[in-house]
Length: 155
Image (cartoon, helix red, strand yellow):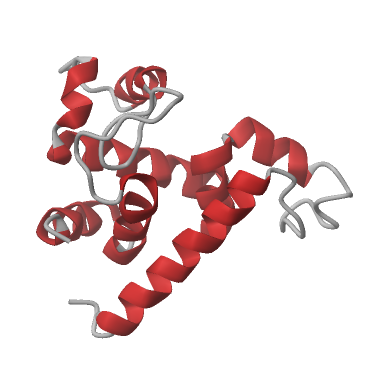
């Protein structure tokens, strides 16, 4: 993608595989920096304006970015990665849960983990009840695998 170098730079700062970041941006917006979803999510990594606001307060950022700056690829990738990093921490490093929460919201994923219909151990999701989120997780995983086979040496 045209954002590989940006993804790699953010990846080095965050410790999150740039191929996962690229897979999310690919799945979310097809790498369109100006994308806006029906629900109002914006930019490459499709961040909701209220999530963007929350992430800025969470990161102790002195600069308060305006909503329109979500169309700036650098800012969007930085905060999308920050959010994903928050979710990976929230799920103790379990990437699949973080990806599900990136799409379906962590309150939903938390409640699915507490429901024996979807999780037997409270740690692993055996089923994702939201079809959109289930398909999203599968698409991100497939896209990441494709990047891994294309860029097997991590460069």
